[in-house]
Length: 404
Ligand SMILES: *[C@@H]1O[C@H](CO)[C@@H](O)[C@H](O)[C@H]1NC(C)=O
Ligand SMILES: *[C@@H]1O[C@H](CO)[C@@H](O)[C@H](O)[C@H]1NC(C)=O
Ligand SMILES: *[C@@H]1O[C@H](CO)[C@@H](O)[C@H](O)[C@H]1NC(C)=O
Ligand SMILES: *[C@@H]1O[C@H](CO)[C@@H](O)[C@H](O)[C@H]1NC(C)=O
Ligand SMILES: *[C@@H]1O[C@H](CO)[C@@H](O)[C@H](O)[C@H]1NC(C)=O
Ligand SMILES: *[C@@H]1O[C@H](CO)[C@@H](O)[C@H](O)[C@H]1NC(C)=O
Ligand SMILES: *[C@@H]1O[C@H](CO)[C@@H](O)[C@H](O)[C@H]1NC(C)=O
Ligand SMILES: [Zn+2]
Image 1 (cartoon, helix red, strand yellow):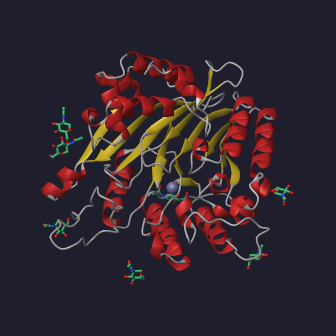
Image 2 (cartoon, protein in one colour):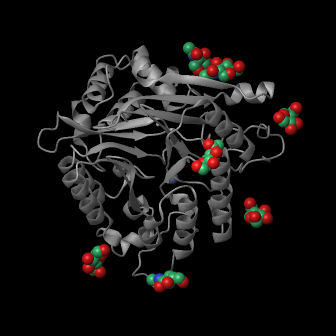
Image 3 (cartoon, helix red, strand yellow):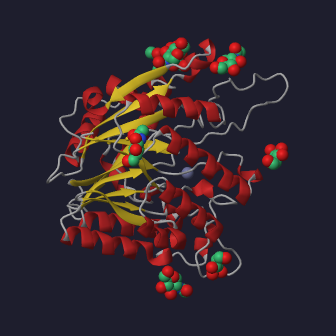
């Protein structure tokens, strides 16, 4: 799970996994540390608990974007009951830790049982309403208005107004994903979710609202047809969409959407927020976005973001929680602003000195400072830069411009 703690020129985002799957390893191997382990392990509940408590005491939080994946990675041994237990346990912890804060949630791929499998309504042999009912109850309990229930129960997506002039659209990205095998039967805009999103973006444009899109899987990790259509929509509504927030990869990443007709003109920003889970070779972390929320006439664009990590090595070593203010984007990257143009310029600076210290820093943060730049060679760096300028699946062209 990624928690995007949103701070409205000031806002806070969380993304989380909390159960250790590797308390015991084979004889002769060192077991997991009390606070967690960076091998193929998720986070112990108590580590998530102290980290959230730390955030709640330190950060000024206006609302939270929260992009799913609550169950751990022992996917071969999960039942509907266990998924519902994860949902209930973690959402209760969030409600207790952040009283009176509204959480805008999105559903992850791990919430289903078996994971990834989200049947569409025309499938007779499988039914996911056990999950969508629970999500509706749980999300409304975390502050969503009652009128979101209808679409959550239908497909685990919804829209609502967050602040005057700011609408959030939360998508169920499992209906875009190649890992959702049900889509092989029919992948044409399942549940007509994209058409629904277009209708709301049009409504927002007509009513002068700005829109944040939140979802678990970033669109470039979707089936190509979905992701190219999604990109087209982002292009059409570039003046309405003022930010996209995703999770799923566990890494600290971003991507730029470019104009379809003028591929050098950046039009939108997607932020992939680092996860709370350590899976794999990552420190635990959370992210705070500062968003232009000065009312009236707020742009609701991201003005800056800050990432806080737990140093898991030191925390296990001294058996005392050690948090690190990892970085503030504008300061660390010497950027004027965080608009698409600024990120585009940033990527160009990285391209000029791909093997230099700034790119090392970007890789370090990509791993939430578990690794450093020496662990990312030239090809790895080029791969990251390609990712930053790619917003569509199976689109080879953005990388063409990046020097070898
Ligand atoms: C599978 O889950 C059950 C119930 O939680 C547990 O008792 C069992 O140990 C698990 N098996 C494995 C191999 O993890
Ligand atoms: C939460 O809101 C309620 C009602 O508005 C208020 O009575 C309570 O003091 C608030 N709690 C916190 C911790 O802000
Ligand atoms: C799934 O189950 C719910 C509740 O039991 C029911 O209302 C719905 O019609 C079912 N959907 C399908 C496609 O069978
Ligand atoms: C596939 O689903 C779409 C909408 O979800 C529907 O319009 C279309 O008719 C379906 N195609 C088939 C072959 O069932
Ligand atoms: C984490 O702690 C270890 C052990 O004290 C130290 O070597 C390392 O530099 C620290 N990393 C960060 C990012 O603070
Ligand atoms: C580490 O601290 C926790 C409580 O904070 C305690 O339960 C645990 O026993 C300690 N572990 C060691 C090895 O001292
Ligand atoms: C980077 O990490 C490697 C492997 O953990 C380590 O050997 C090296 O000393 C680190 N370099 C710096 C500059 O911290
Ligand atoms: Zn995921």
